[in-house]
Length: 256
Image 1 (cartoon, rainbow, N blue to C red):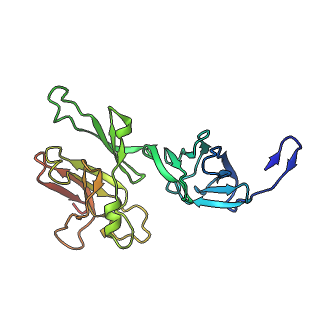
Image 2: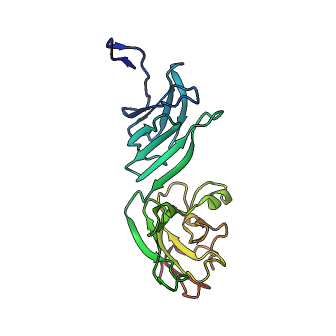
Image 3: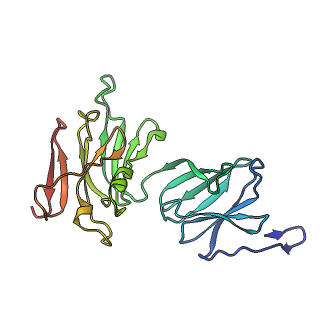
């Protein structure tokens, strides 16, 4: 911190993680805090510094899922921080509240962190006048299955894996989505999207983590119920299809 009038260094903070890439100052007066936010390259965390106490106030680890943070900025006279990352293609707003040490996620806009490798139109069956798809369902090597609205970007969301992570004791998910299929006719009756997965990073993953999964296009979430395989030790699923009626799903295996 430098006093520009007198060209005098007031105090210094040291990041242990590398070169500082972005700095922002809180100008809100309601919370009674004097904070500076900073981030460094190749780490992906945000550190909040208390300028009055001259020490770390709080730290947010991996607010962008471990990706590098490109820019930080506080909204003028509001307790809201905006963080942006080119690597995960997202923009997030964080709200500071009284009594809370760390800010909570207020809203975000994001897309795939990597180029999608499968895109399919979805919707329109319930609209006899337009008879056109209103959404896209996409998957990418970033691991996400995403529904993109063609009418309103605010309705675009990632499918949630929270139910799966809660059900699994080891905390591992099923890996990046490799391919998917769906039927729109039974979307309100049960999970109507079927996916197969690449094994991703092999650490601590076995074949069970690459099992096909069921998802709901209505709730935008994964099912707690896992697809049952007919025989133990079956080879990995490499392709999936759902019948038009929505009652059946077919799996294609690597062994043919």
